[in-house]
Amino acid sequence: MTEKQTWSQRFESALNPAIARFNASIGFDIELIKYDITGSQAHAKMLAHTGIISYEEGEILFTGLEQIRQEYDQGKFQPGIDSEDVHFAVEKRLTEIVGDVGKKLHTARSRNDQVGTDTRLYLRDQIRKIRQQLREFQGVLLDIAEKNVETLIPGYTHLQRAQPVSLAHHLLAYFQMAQRDWERLADVYSRVNISPLGCGALAGTTFPIDRHYTAKLLHFDRVYANSLDGVSDRDFAIEFLCAASIIMVHLSRLSEEVILWASEEFRFVTLKDSCATGSSIMPQKKNPDVPELVRGKTGRVFGHLQAMLVIMKGLPLAYNKDLQEDKEGIFDSVNTVKACLEAMTILLQEGLEFRHQRLATAVTEDFANATDVADYLAARGVPFREAYNIVGKVVKTSIAAGKLLKDLHLEEWQEIHPAFAADIYEAIAPRQVVAARNSYGGTGFVQVREAIVNARTQINGK
Image 1 (cartoon, rainbow, N blue to C red):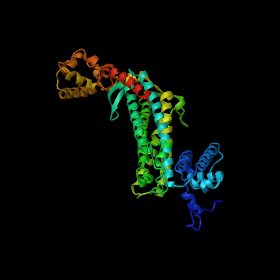
Image 2 (tube, one colour):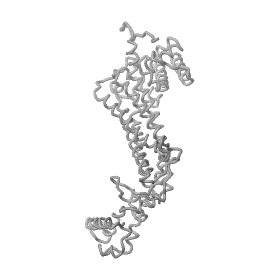
Image 3 (cartoon, helix red, strand yellow):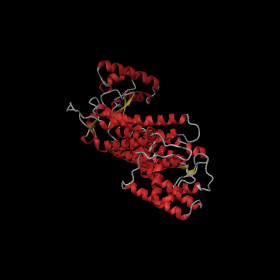
Image 4 (cartoon, rainbow, N blue to C red):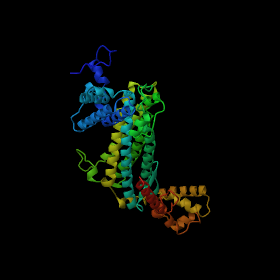
């Protein structure tokens, strides 16, 4: 039976039970309980430090809060809908444990600055975990890259064969995406790590609090300079959801490539049993469920970002109940990103096997070396645009004749242009095509090896 509860003497009756259920957030904001306890302990210490309550009362509050932490960890404290939210649940239990002194905890504090503090403590912790997962993901990419510097794979633009590249170079592109994700989260962290505690409901407080003291206890870098902004700001949440969405973009792009590579049409990779499933009626199939799920889950993170933007776009200052809707999107995005990073890391580490013979064949069966023919002529004094047009005609006639460029006889090359010599065959061999692209950041083997060394240094520096 729902306990009859009124907010203050201003109210004469309790909420309608259906409205109480609609209003409650305890079903999901219980995720914040350990952060709520930590923030409350810092607040209690500050109240004692400034003389707002006695030192002994501060100790009683701190110890009682620690008991709640232990009870929750042991499964003995499981608040229900009667508590409405995690903040009331903790305060109610604290009063049961320590008596009336528990009612002093909320002095000089509002749920508005309290929930803002809890959310930032939670998100700060989760950002650190996600950044560590990104490092593990990058490490696996590097492990594969180191073994495949001279493995060639067709490179694509517009999903059409373009130029062959080193497989390691291809994977290092995802390393660089993950590096930006890692750096971006660090930037977001700097704005998450600002304390709103002490902003009160919206206007600060009449009590002689020390906001910098609680910020130091909670390891915040600084405090909000404006109390209205402190309780209503969710920029940090939007920024995190944006960073999370970009991580998912990168994972989804890699997923799409793995799905293509595993298809019978490409046959660049084989899916291992540990990371694939079968069909309920087609016994021959292996399905790329991991990358498909990652690709699918990307949309839910995008949705949470869009929802947060819509929530914020019309809110006047300061706190509004709409802001209760930020948490589920944040929690789900955190869990989704962490799960997808873990799954993709495992997939790369133990779920894929590159088919080297197929890759070696693939880079010899197209016209991806056409640019190198144009470069060959340009290096011998033919203006590049003229060389480009010459090679375009060669490709057209070769396709009509059912030939590849490597199949043309030397006489045919020299009929096309006298600058061609016997070394044209070496110049257009796939391995040479890749090796020759030795500009900084290119796919040339020398550049790729240097890039791997630099990447190792980067992630080992944490």
